[in-house]
Length: 239
Figure 1: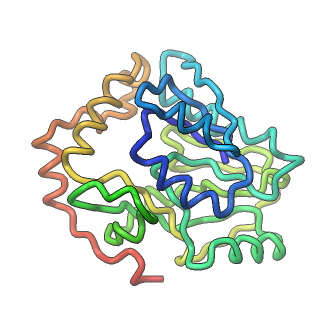
Figure 2: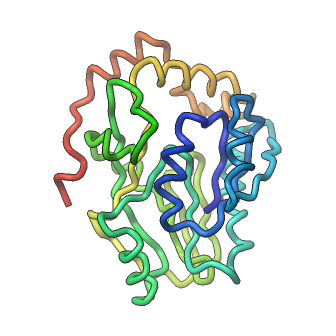
């Protein structure tokens, strides 16, 4: 797994609890965390902690470059690579068995169904987060292609935000509504408001020029209004 982290002590327990079931090695790029995230990462026996160095005056551009390129070093060692954020959990009712079967069948490129999960309060730290937060809404913009075979995919070519890509190589797709990419961002108005403000402060000049990450400029009133408009359903009742 390859990903970028910054001040994620609240989400990391859920992240590791879920992905430790399938991930043999994590390569995580830290963007100067100050909340204990680095200590959590260095304590995990499967994590290789790397530094994120901002390039071209852009946080989002740097993230796109890392996610498009870093996984290539695993071409000779990994059956599959995951490229995602700490708040994105790839879920299937029988995930390990599903992935093993797909590998044996020659699948090289997975197309999960994206869901934005919603909770009025931040969940308790025990257990899996999707056991506590079961409701959300289907979002095709989050059908992110985060899982693929690094030996068969030559280039992934993520666009800014990494919501879409233009893969090159031997592409054998697998689309299955039971394979879901659960995005745990909307975990209460206070959490989102605080997180957005912190992320907004980190944006660089080129990010602002391109309007990348402009949603982080929302204030508490705007976040609350967004929550009020949500109409979440049970994400596990379909597919």
